[in-house]
Image (cartoon, rainbow, N blue to C red):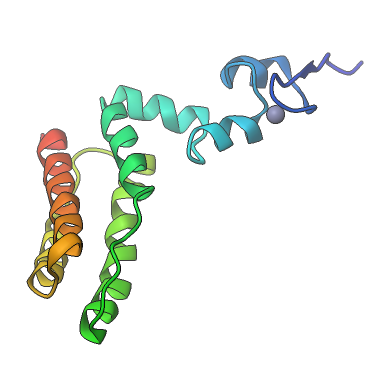
Length: 140
Ligand SMILES: [Zn+2]
C-alpha cells in the first residue's frame, strides 16, 4: 500500500507527509526555491550555529549588482577572486562547521580594494566587513 501523499501548498506536486512537514507545507523544490536553494536540514544547521542573520544578509548582498568597472586589470582580478570569495562564504554558511577561516579572502579583498574606486570600492568594503564579521561570529 502506498503511503498517502499531500499536495504542496504552492505547486501541484504530491509529497510524502514527512517532506510536507519538514518543508513547512511545501515540496522540496518549492522549499528550496523560497530559501535560496537551501534544504531544510541546511537551514536548521544554520539555526543551530546561530548564523541565520548572516545567511539573510548574505543573500541580500548576493542580490546586489556588482558595480561596473572600467580598467582591464580590475576586471581580471574581480573575475578571479570574487567567485572564489563568494563560494567560500556561501560554502561555509551551507556546509561549514566550527569557525570560518576568512584569512585568504582578506588577502584577495585587499588586492581588489587597492585597484578599485568609487562604488566598486564600497562594494568590496562591504564584502570585507561581512567576511570579518563572519570570522568574528564563529571564533571559538
Ligand atoms: Zn511545490
